[in-house]
Image (spheres, rainbow, N blue to C red):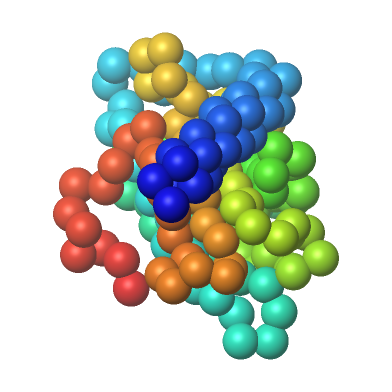
Length: 169
């Protein structure tokens, strides 16, 4: 029994490390752009909900950042009137970029997922598709989950956590 637990733990760790590397590799395929010292650092965290009909729903909670579409951005290179960065997000499922995100919620269909452990990573990007960075770190959040488990979340990670956990809905 103890060997099975160790084997499962090692397998999960290897999966997490390999999939994290895939998502990071995919994210790094875009140019990066440092936010600079004067701009408030955007913060990001993900919340996942099992969809009763199909797949999962992800809520992307951000601070100091305005998620919007390029056609409604005042000036895609500039800050919002509040002094925050603006842009969109890139959504990665199991290391594969699936779509852009212009708002705070996204549905991930079951057909994009595999049995067992899955990873969803979301990076914040400028409207020129540059990865926003603070220092040496891309601004990204990731969640590992297994739909057969209760609770489904196995691990979550963010490079820039929210200031208050009360910001989740």
